[in-house]
Image (cartoon, one colour):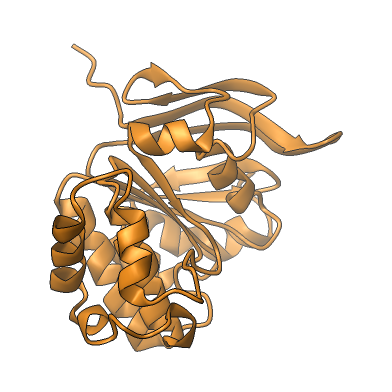
Amino acid sequence: MRIAPMLELMDVHAGYGRIEVLCGVDLVVPQGAVIALLGPNGAGKTTLLRTMSGLLKPTSGHIHLADQHIDGISPARLNRAGLCLVPEGRGVFPNLTVEENLVLASLAGPPTRQVLQAAYERFPILEQRRAQLAGNLSGGEQQMLSLARALASEPAVLLLDELSMGLAPKIVESLYDTVAEIASSGVSVVVVEQFASAALRVADYAAVMRGGRIVASGEPQEIEALLGELYFGGAA
């Protein structure tokens, strides 16, 4: 019997107006797996995440979440169905405190006390900063808060866009350790990264995009060995 993947894209096309950005993307995301989605600037990675999360409607093709058809469903409904996007640049309210950010994230999910306890256990530094404005946190702390807010909805699929942007290597390594822990609890994670090494370290599978298509996919070690060629030419 076929076991349905947690998220599946089949021949997905999408774009902006007359400009087609995604040109027939196929992708399978198993439950509890980390998928590293790599590629140079302009490859279509962020557009693919926007399409997965409902922010951009595909022009053709199909997207399934837990074997349910979700083409064209609103981001709010997708979030309630278990799919959550952490956008590039972090998704926090800078003029609210850390705790206020977490309380807001809990409104449509588990009880506030449960959300706060889980966030502070996973990221102890956030408890120390709980009365501080989110906009005054360091970049790494803001990214921790973004992850904690996303996890408040108890997602089945977590989409992460450029988790490492602007952060020191040690902070990036720690965040990706957290990504691996999240996946080990059964959450499927798709990580978009321009810089591949940190994501590949924790990935179960990797795929490379170029020109709006996935040009290669496989085990992280296989993809890492081919990155130069896949980013800049050949293997199309």
